[in-house]
Structure formats: structure tokens, C-alpha cells
Amino acid sequence: MKSMIAGVAVVAGALFAAAPAISQDKELNLYSARHYQTDEALYADFTRTTGIRINRIEAGDEAILERLRNEGANSPADVILLVDAARLWKAEVEGLFQPVKSAVLQERVPAFLRSKDDGKGSQWFGFSTRARVIVYNKKAIRPENVRNYQDLASPALKGQVCTRSGAHPYMLSLIGAVSEHLGEAEAEKWARGVVANFARSPRGGDTDQIRAVATGECGVALTNTYYFVRMMRSDKPADREAVDKVGIVMPNQSGWGTHVNVSGGGVARHAPNRAAAVKFLEYLAGDSAQAYFAGGNNEWPVVKSAAAKNPELDSLGEFKVDQLPIGSIGRSQVTAAKIIDRAGWR
Image (tube, rainbow, N blue to C red; front, side):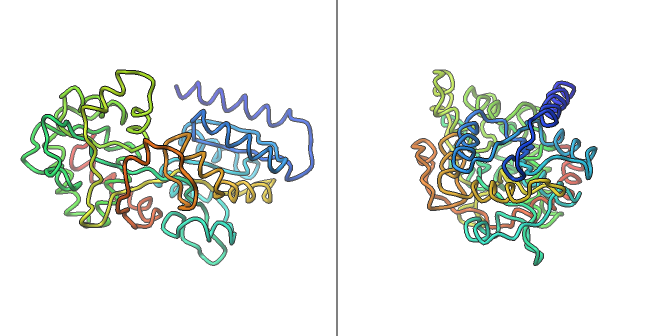
């Protein structure tokens, strides 16, 4: 799989080089880890409204980061889009972004969903959010017993918990957030309790966890909301039947709130088309692009004024969001990695 991704990246890079020369800032070189077909409409709308052509490379987050490291100052990348706070933080600490001072972005993107402004601007901005929630088998589990992330470590759930690998960035971000709230020692105690409750060894993605809960292999599991809503909107009867068998809980509503993560990006450190790059980021914070995120990939807009137009997403309702800064969640992945190693959450 890695070789296939690398191959695609090389071909796309060759296309960059072969493209006809056009005026500066009338093109944009985008490195994106977002692999959602619905984003095509978003990119087309940006070009239609601005006249700026997008040259795009799509690959996994790690493949994109490795490519940027190898290219160094010769990188043609203008904008980098990544999925998950841990990856955005990693790109920031490796110096792959440059600061952006934009009144539009500061006004529209909440402070806790962007990197800290050091006076020169923020390194990256979140443009859509997804919540990490608990799903439960309606026949086997009472929802009042899984109201909080901490409940997953309760002895009452022995042999009932399924998750994906703790080493996955989605899990590292959640475990990191728990460590920020509880402290490292208590977070490790919690992680050990979750591991003790495993129904099986961690495997698969979030959709696999939902299906395992529906079949009764597990009583409860963790998933990102956009996977759940995707199954709600699926034209496959098996997906809709699975969703009907599970309930969903927005955890920690009486405490710190439900953990959310972001898909976001920033201007690449050596961007040759910086003005176009900033314009693209500002476009992503606009109402039309924000509506694309919600309608196309079942993610919540970061801008509250944007119309989601997604009844299934809306059906999840309003909930208290954890206001922990996304940047601190990214930093805490180092602690989270130590916790999963010691707890055996692999």
C-alpha cells in the first residue's frame, strides 16, 4: 500500500512540473490527506469563484509528511490539509507550516480549533470537526451505563469493549485528551481498565467497530461520528440495519464535554503561491465550503453560521463540546503513546 501511495504522489508531482506556466497566484499546489470524493465539488467551486487552478496530490497523512520532509525548501506545496490534531501538531513541530495572520480566519475559526497565535499568526486551522462517541448494542447495554469515556473502564463492561488500535491517531488524540483532563497516572489507570474489558484484540477501523456492536460481538465501542452518519445515509440495507441496532452516546456531557477532532490545514513553509494559499484557507472558512464539509462528508462546520443541510448529522442533536485546545491534544500524543504501550492497548 505504501508503494502505491508513493507512486501516485510521484505521478502527481510530475504533473506539477509538466503543467503550463501561468501567472503567480493563479494556481495552487495542494497536498491533501482528505480522500473524500465529495471534496471534488469544493475544489471546483473554489476555482470557479477565484479563477485559481488547483493541482492536487492526495495520499495518507504520513506519506504527505514524509514527502514534505524529503522535498525540503524545494517543495512546490502551497497548502497542506491533514486529518487529526496529532498529525497537524506533528507537522507544526517539524516546521512544515508557516504562520498566517488573517482577520477572516481569526474571526471565523474558534480559537480552540486552531494553533496558538505566537504574534505572527497561527500555523494551522481546523475547518471541520467530528466527535469521538460511544456506540452501544441496544439489546445488551443500557445507555446510562456508558455516559462517560471513564465508564469504558468499569468492571461492569468486562468482555464488552471493542476499539481500533490505540496507536491509531484517532485513539491517540482521545487518550491524549483524557490525560490532559485526568493527568497521566489516572489516564493510564483508565486505559488499563479499558484493556481489561476488551471483547477482542483491537482491530479494524471505526466502521468495523459499529458493525461488531450491531452483531453483538461487542457491547460498546468508540467511533468518529462521520462514520456513523455515513452508515445512516448509506444506500446499503446492511449498513442501515446495523445502525438501527446500536445507540449513540455523546460522552461526558455532565463534565468536560465530548472529545472532538478536526480536519484542518495551513500554508506550507515554502509555498511558492502564498497569496493563493491564504485565499484558499479563507475560502475553506466560508459558508459555502463549510456547507460542503457537512453535506459531503458528514462533518460539523467550525463556523456556526454555515448551513449543514444534512438531516442525519442534525439528528445527532446539540451537545457539549470539549473546549480543550486542539493544539494541546496534538502535543499530548507523546504521553498517549507511552500510556498505550504500558497498558497494552495495541
